[in-house]
Image (cartoon, rainbow, N blue to C red):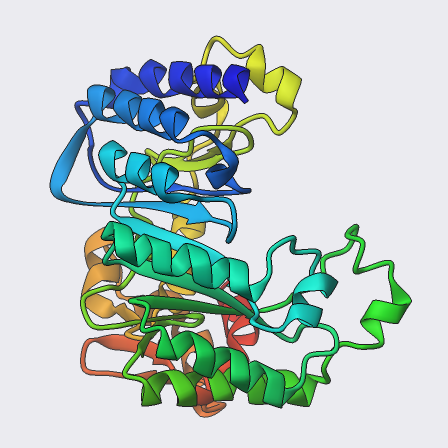
Length: 344
């Protein structure tokens, strides 16, 4: 861990060459379980960020935390470091479902970590939830949603489990046979919206809900294609209309000394690729995309470029035209990938 953190700090400082071109509006420490690190390392990492880059006064600084991996001292070190938002990877309040997912925490571990964070003074907390888990029922998922809502976090992310090829789940026929049906998956998605709306959370992205004013700035940046720098093992970036990623092999990462080679070698995204990303990423946001933004960025009207897929999606009831632009309909939320591929 120490070797990794030292190299991560080296990488952060190496990007000082571009620090005058950008002001940091959000920082997200995630991808894995950063909360297993000693708090002092988080402090040192953020010290490197703040000494290298200029940040806005309203900086959103998040860290992903696995329940049971933090104590009072660690949470206080997060505050000292400048973290003001915690994201808990709860997934479910059902012990059996957590075991199936391979999670080492219990719901009780989560409650202890959550209440401790409130006690320390964190006023912006997200909770990650998952639906379509093997053996999960509508009733058990409803229980998870209601339990979490009564805790009154500021933000809730609710994703459906996707079985990826090459994972343990993909090759486990017993687990696959216990997956909820597609119809149940759709019902869980609807249930998420209905219950969270009842508790005054509004959906601002396909899988993200927040109290007003607590929308995750970092995630919105991804959907709006705001430039971002990813540092650390396997981290991805979007800078100067180039997409590039770090090494995913630990030993190779520790040997890097020329940090900007990946960026220099990456091709600039074509105008077509940029337009495609603008549409299918922007449509993930409930408010959708605007005609004016498209025209300002690309010098063409969106109807000229994507007239056919727009017309087709509207006729299918998956999209609708607004005064400002276009957005998915409620029906389109369920079939978003079907819409997105039309623009590629």
